[in-house]
Image 1 (cartoon, each protein chain N blue to C red):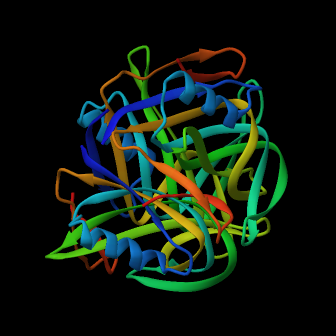
Image 2 (image 1 turned 30 degrees about the horizontal axis):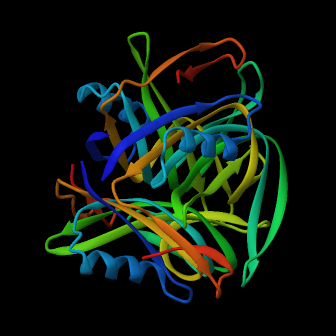
Length: 135
Length: 135
Length: 135
């Protein structure tokens, strides 16, 4: 169940992923679902998985770009929270989505996180080379 | 917490944003999260933020187009509800996402709204020129 | 209300839609919301609605591709569960979204399903030629 649904705004010029991380830390959220993010960004860096194990390519997208949507989770690996977010960005001419590496907010980012009553956990996976959810 | 999760269908030929607005009004939803919308549209008009404060460009997309996903919120500005939705649309050839200005449903739109137990509020923001969520 | 939020991983090489179906069957989920899916796929087949009633085109997308997001529902038609998912996929070069017909997981797929306390139902609709949600 979502014990609590957190809705908050990230402000212009702030870095989106670090602000979500800070919010979770300040509110002691160690297990949750990123239900959504909408808004706009000045720029974004997305990662695209190319090969296993764990070979990413990072691509920088210049803005302004709409944040169309985002999904993900907050989970613990050992005692450290990992926030994993995929995000969709679009202008009138270009549209891409991938793993959120970093993004600078343009007008706003409206973030919705559902805090869970069960603990999500990750561990290193040698096949994928990534920290995967434990079922 | 989501006190109630509303799931409803918008029918062919109906305008999506006004039907979501009407549903919220009829069910007295003044604070909530648009968890998702999927379906298809005959056409859609999306807004893209170009400059601050508040300069948008509107682009019309002819369909049929899939509604891939949507996210957003229902919040009060003073006593008036504001429904803010970003939506992703795609055909086999074109894919874009942005601020939902209006869209005409093709086959269906399946809308999910989570009604909140806390009141979301917006106020005019002079820097962005938009009605922003109050933290 | 979401009585329970299910979060689970689908593993490399598995077919996404059939694994979600299997999970729902094993956990007796007959009514729910697909809140999100992120991860990556080796390949995906998406359907795009072209004409009514019910004429789809299927398009195969070679990967690797990020699963940017997904939304949908679990509902009953008579006594059979129907899982309806729209999904957004993207590489650094190509980005599309549509009705999930099938997809093979590359590194992972992290699925979030909110189980509902009310029963969603579908029935055949002669105008659209599809199984539509009953309001």
